[in-house]
Amino acid sequence: MKKRSILLAAAVSAAAGLLAFRLCLCAQEPPEADGKNWRAAFGPLEVVQRVRPTEFTGFLANPHRGAATFQRFNGDPLYPGNRWDDAAGPTQFPPFSGIPKDLSNGPYPSTTVAYCRWIWSVLEPEKGQYRWDILDGALKAARERGQTLQVRLQPCAGRSGFPDWFWKTGAVRQKDVPDEPDYNCEAYVKHWSELIRAFAARFDGHRDLESFDMAYAGLCGEGGGNTTDATAEKLMDVYLGGFRRTQLVAMLGTHGAAYALAKRKDIGWRADSFGDLRTGGNSPDVPKGLGWNHMYEDYPRQILEAGAGEAWKTGPVILETGGTDGSWRRRGFDIDFILEWGLRNHCSVFMPKSCAIPEDWRQKIEDFSNRIGYRFVLRQVTFPLEAKPGAPVQFDVYLDNVGCAPIYRPYKLALRFTQGGSVEVVPFRNDIRTWLPGQVWFSEKLPFPAKFKPGVVKVDMAIVDPNTNRPVVRFAVKEIDKDDWHPLRFMDVRPGT
Image (cartoon, rainbow, N blue to C red; front, top):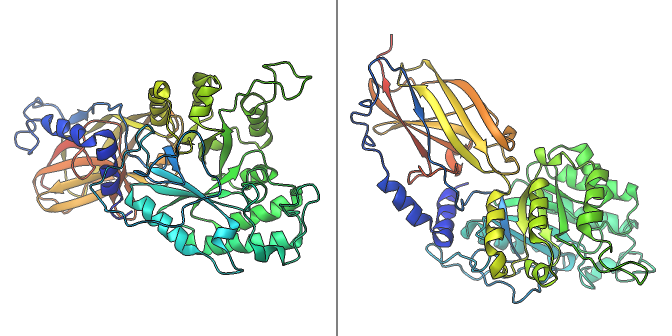
C-alpha cells in the first residue's frame, strides 16, 4: 500500500476537486487545534468528550468500490460512441508523466478501480511462454493512476482468442461452434488449468490486483461454454486452489458460480449484462414488450439458483453494463429501475465500459457510483478527557454505513496518539468487514500508550492497512488532515501511579 493514499488523493484532487475541499476544511480548524486551552469548553466536573464529525456527501477516492474504467485507466480517452472492444486488452503502457496530471475521465464517473481482460492468445502466444510483462505494465499503470486492477483471462472473444499451438494439442472442436473447443476435452482442461495456475503463482496477493474473474470457459468466459457440471467443478477447483489472497469473482449464470459460492464464503459474483431491459419479441409469436431479458427473467433466477442472495455479505457484487449507458438511453430503458436494482442487489463495483455517460443521466450515474459499495459516515466518538499511561481507555464508536454493501478487506480501525514527535497507532479489535449497511455501534477498551508523559496528546482516527498503519479508507466526513487521518480532539495525560 506504499504511496497508495497519496496517489488516491491526487486522483480525486484532479477529478473531483478534493484540493478545494481540503482548503475548506483547513478554514474550519477549531481554535484549539494546537492543543492549547482545548478543555476550556468543558466544565470542571466533565470526564468524557464527544466528537461529532460533519458528514461529507461528495465523491471519495476510496478503494475497492464505485465505478471502473474498462481496458483503460484514469485519464485515458474514452471509447468513441457506444462501442467497445472485449478482446483488445491493453498491451503497451506509454510512460506516465506522474502527478500532477489531469486524471479526470470527462463524461464518466471518477474511479479508483480499473478493469482489463485479455484473450488467451495474447498472454500465452507459445506454450508456457507467458506475457507477464503485459500484466506487470497494467498493474503499474493502475497504481500510477490511483486505481487497483480487476483482471479476467478469457479463453476467447468472438472468433479470436485461442492460440495456434492449442489447436495442435489434440483439442476437439465443437460441431456446432467450430471456433470453440469442446471445453470438456482433455486438452482444454489441461492447458487452461496450467495458465490459471501460472497466473496465480505469479500474482496472487499482488497489492494492485483488485480481483480475478473465475471465467473458466465459453465466449468471453461468461457462460461456461458446453462444460458439464463435473468439468466446471474441476476447472473452478483450479481457481480456488491457486488464489488464497486475491479476491475471486464467479460468473453469475454458470454452474461454476454455484459451486464456488458453496465452497467458499469469500467469493464474489459478477453479472455482465446489467441493465438489459429489451422489450421486443424474440420471435413473431412473442408479443412486443414481453420478450426475454436479463433483468426480469435471467438474473433473479440465476441469483436464486446459484445461492447468491446473501453472498454480498462476504464477497463483492460486480455489475458490467449490457451494452452501454448510451445504448440504454437510445433504447429507452428505465434508468431508475436499473440503478435501484443495482443498489438492492448490493453492488460494489459498476463498470459502464469507458463510454461517455449521456449528459441527462450523468448526475444519476455519479450518485449511483457514490452509493454503491461501502460508505462509512463517522457519527460520534466518545472517550475520556484524561488517561494514565498504560491504563485501559474506553472508546464508544457510532457510525453509519450509508452504502449498500460492506467492505471486504481486513483493514483495521485505529487511533493515532501524538505527543510532540512521539506517535503511537493503536488498532481496534472490531472487524470492519462486519459493518453492513445501516447503523454500527461498538465499545472497546484500548490500552493508552505507556510512553507518553504528562501533558496533552492529540487523538486521530482512521481505517488503516494493518501492515503499514497508513490510512487507506476515508470516512465520509469533512474533517481530515493532510495525512488522511480524521482528527478527533485531545486528551490530557495524568501521571501514572
